[in-house]
Image (cartoon, rainbow, N blue to C red):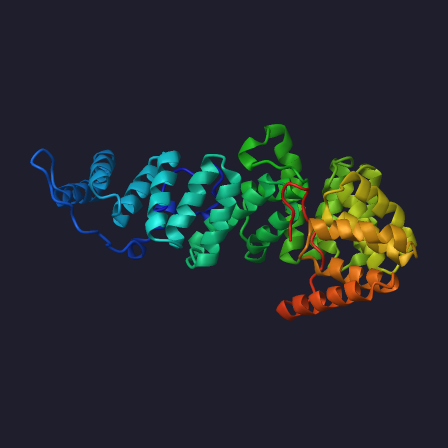
Amino acid sequence: MWAGRQRCRIRQPAILIALAALAFSTLAPAQTSQSPAPSAAQPSFDSLVAQATSARQGGDLPRAADLYTRALRLNPSWPDGWWYLGQMHYAANEYAPAVDAFTHYLDLVPNAAPATALRGLCEFELGQFQPSLRDVRQALALGAADDSRNTQILRYHEALLLTRLGRFEEALTAFTYFAKHHLSNDEMLVAVGLATLRMPNLPADIAPAQRDECSLAGHAAFLLLSGDADSAADAFQRFFQRFPHAPGVHYTYGYLLYPTDPDAAIAQFQREIAVDPDSPMGHTMLAWALLMENEPAAALPAAKKAAAESPGLPLAQLSLGRALLDTGDLKSALPVLQSALALDPGNLEVHIALARAYSEAGRADDARRERLLCLQMTDRSARPAPAMGQQEESPAH
């Protein structure tokens, strides 16, 4: 079962996740390997399995865990033993041994969605955030969210992990699931607020004095993610009246507005820079938005500022390269675009800009290569809007 106390779980009755109900009884089939021959000095493997099963079914989990451990010493290739042992450690909040047990199980039964999900939740509790995100996303891809309650657990933890790792735009995208389904509570709004304020924290780590600011920011962003733009506009204005100097929120508001209202988004990016003149994200998105409005000269100062502040941000380098190219500075544009490509080799917009730059520079072979790459990439997917990306240590593609 998915048991144990989750310090960041959703507690509102409307979306209360009954962890104890999330059992995967049909997903851990009996796969007992052939029993090793017992010695005169120790119980047989089959005897230990029978005793362990009886203790587990009778609710004596400490004794059951000991018996499963003894049985696994005799037969470490017994998948069911690792599965039940992992569950019992998880139920007892013993997350490190639970991770070990689920890892053994997954070595024997690769791509098992429930074990991958539970290992990810244990890693979350241990503060192993990168492995946890990897496992949670893998579990979602493997179908562990087929049950709606499982979906809420995994998607909520995915959003929390993305926020904690500083991947705020992706976190807001993950929270969209809850907004579209109108699933919210106090803790959820604080969590969304952390992503909105670009604070790489978990709700449990926030001081009481900060919770009101996070909650108000989260409420406004949640309304916009749900599609209620008018109510969101009012909520953001109330936030700005109370917290006029809060960095990050004008940027986030603009980022969320940009797909549907670029002009309003540009105004928010400009206000972000007024609040925080050194905001790399504000300058980056302002530059990109102005480029998309065919205003490269206006975009160039913001692009230069963004690239200088965040040399490892792919979109900052792309924006500067595009602004230089569009204002006729081909010589300066090429190395900047090549730098953007090194940061994000899979970014279609970079390849498009490079194809044009190489063509204007008379480098026909390089231009042809980039155009062919663009065709191959567009065959795989529709042309995407560029991602913000991350700093050097975790670039987004």
